[in-house]
Length: 442
Ligand SMILES: [Zn+2]
Image (cartoon, rainbow, N blue to C red; front, side):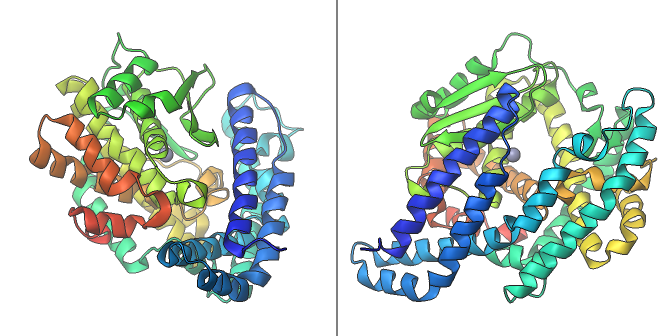
């Protein structure tokens, strides 16, 4: 007998979900070189087979389930969104290009000498990979149109519950309120633009000297009263590590960190702790135990100021706030650049210089626009950091007023309002129902 649609999809999807998470975790933390294309193609095949079944079988399944029809409807809607996204982003043509672009040194530059002149290396490389970055955009657009959308952006915004006008207004508002300060911070600390991020963030503030990452997470979760979270999170620090969180099995959560030799690196660890705590305190399992990109980044951003309040002195808190202003403005500019780029890819270099010269003087070789992984591997993602940053500020103010120094109340509030029911409610809904306001008006 065929399993009911919802359970069948969920079971198969979650198996692949954890296998993929473990492979990526090992690649980043143990220097393995697992090829994830096989698993991506399994996700694609799963989406394809259920896409054909989804309308009829899903509706019948919702009708036949009498345990909780509301949950069945929510689960069906979530599955439909996952399927549509995977039909594009795990399509074999997309996966093949992402695979090459994710390791461009190896796939495009084996004949190039990286050591002698890094600037020249990057200049040559950027021109080699640009055609494939643009081709990837074209393929995503084509696949989205085949699924009935106007373009890839509308598909992403529809399935991620994003109000395009609200988001654009939020990004512009963030820049109006913060860009002048961000420019000053960048100039005071000699921060420069790098392909994909910022260089010199380690100049801002000073790192805490007598704290280990384990003791930081322990103290943070203890103060918030989230004791179970600490038991479910493990940290790996490596010299070549970077901020990354992975859930490799149900409630088996791992954080990867680089050397904690600057305040900025500690900020990244706090951010990762936010990802990890939200996963650890999610009471749901299966697909409701997973997360949307917007929710994931917002919960990471929420913990940054909370951890700073609990673990850093006043001066460090101010410096970390400065880092947040600067990086959130870079993300906002990057998102607006991305929207303009998809409107007119032929102007990529000009748009890159126009947008980023609002933050730093001297944006360098405009051909470097292609290196930002958000242009290829994670498109329509970077704005989540800005939305999350603004939500984090609002939640921090709200809890300071409502609960003051009673940090266990902060933890209880976060569980009740955001963590516990996982993916059953969207971030937009959770934010509205939490009493901090409309997400797009923050
Ligand atoms: Zn994150």
